[in-house]
Length: 247
Image (cartoon, rainbow, N blue to C red; front, side, top):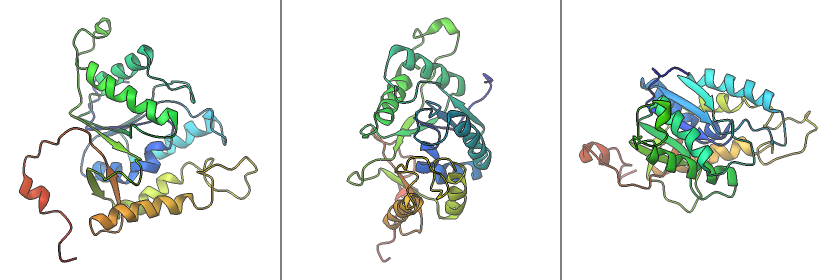
């Protein structure tokens, strides 16, 4: 990948489709606003119950085109064996220094899927040490530290830090999700069923969007959690966009 690529947002998921199922609506909205957006998959999803790594790579490319991404890349860690190690951290640091994203979206830190939770650990540590000039200095890359890390796919019991209205992009998000045909419900597919291939999976995604939408009085939305305090430039502009008290 070119050293000249500078992203506004880099969404990082453990497997191809994690980002799309979680926050594709927000990515579509950001692209429409003129931001440069990329996805970094941690693994190729080769341990997935359905499909193959090759099929999923093709599906990920189709989803990237539908999202109009500036870049899609893969850290190439082994699926099912994603761990926070010095090797995985260095790989992530090099990607962050290469793409220099202002904002990162990634998994929530507590997740029953180990690959998801460990992806969060790798991202958060790498986001810090990537800013240390002497860390992994032999590559010649310039130090870099993202401005913020926001987390998606968190439990229902967690209150989102902010919610993004994606109503205008809900249908496009569904089309992006359907790029992953090998993973979704298909009555002709004789492979073992998974939570994703269950007939109700896409309806559950819509239900989640409608839940977050109800928090801000819109049809569809996606929620995010930020651990650090947010630096708000214009609190009046921010707070005046809240749901009307008369709704």
